[in-house]
Image (cartoon, rainbow, N blue to C red; front, side, top):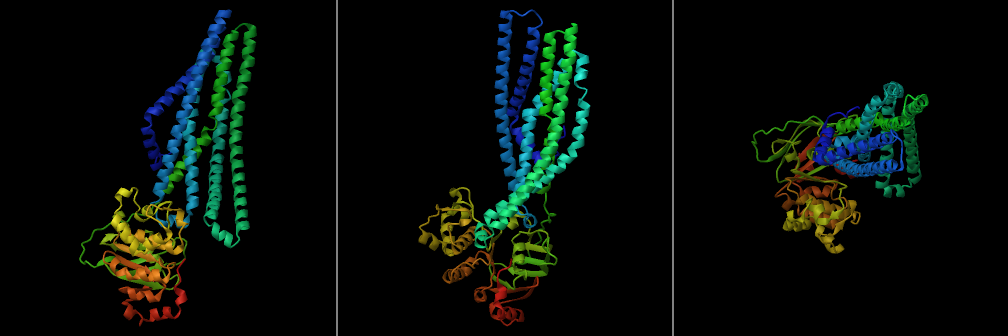
Length: 578
């Protein structure tokens, strides 16, 4: 038996199994009862024919065999029920554990691999581990016990016939290990094709509106059909290899039964062996052959589980090098965000998006960040928000390294396309599990500041009204007001608005801007905007170009700057970045 490698996934499995120790003990006892009852039936048959059979003796032995059969059925049924319960518990807990850790992964991972493909891989790996757990608890232990007890029984009955029955075992084991490498490669290939297909399906359904608008149904339908064909071919190859191994094992084990039956029959004819002894020997050998055949997939199942655990370990441990959080002495009470020689390049990009930026943001001020499309302004605020860690240079917030969890919680960002989950409005705003933990006065206040209270009044909503996934029951402008309300409710010290007012009407945007000074009393506000008229509501304007901060000044003075003038002459270049 090949054991799965140790790591965080193995440790999680071990912890979960430890909590089920009593149930696992019961499963072990039931496995023993299944083995004992099955061998008890064979041994009872042998005893029946050791003496002349009378009606009374026959009835007695048949009744006892029926009792053993009932014990076998009940033990096997209860064992299967408990094993399925354990398997489902492990599957659900392991999947939630893996997805929970994925939520804390850095953005770089999701830039390289689509979330739908990551989920598909995790789901495939969890199912492989699930199959392994079921195999071990339900099949392997029983089959191993049957083989061990059967071998002892056969040796005690006839050493010569026992040796004849196991002569094919070494050859079968050799074949298993010869084919195992190909099985592992075929399983890896199938996993990749399944992930690609699931990714295509999930992404297509999530973008169904764009698909219909641009009439992409035929193209994506053909891609899905092609992916399904690749999955079918990969599965067919994997099953072919598994069938070869299984078929050879079954043929080898049951052909030995036929051979032993022939040799044993000759011994019965010659009088050197009793017929009852031969019947019991064959029954035990059949039990062993069935058990041997049932664990013929052990190498395939274990290989899949081992690869799954290794893949999950690699994925869940895949983090950039941790930056040590430094707590330097705070010599200034105003420099709340400090960037020093900050540079960054996306993994698949040819050039840097940010180049050696050094700048200080003062607390409780409003900053407008403007620049051409692709200038790096969105990348800059994503780094400040903590979405990426693989940067060069230093980001200090409150004189602490940006990557620390406590520091990350001090920054809130309203994205261009915010996410909302299915649930009540109050929960989408406060992000609290229970309403008992909600500050109702604060909830009402942030709704007013974001003008979301107007949305509630016009739609007849209350804070208990349900929001569908991604707030499909709200318009674009209403979604952005809800997102702003959520950001204002948080205890963050820094608020970032990334083109967050694009979908707002002029009146609503004007209302939000009028509240900026009040918001800035408790927060430092960074606004990415292509609306040059809104810069007059900020304290400072920062111009970003080619990954560098090329100008920074008050709104009244920045309009005289040559970099600002270049942008103001071509306002269309300020449209949002990809």
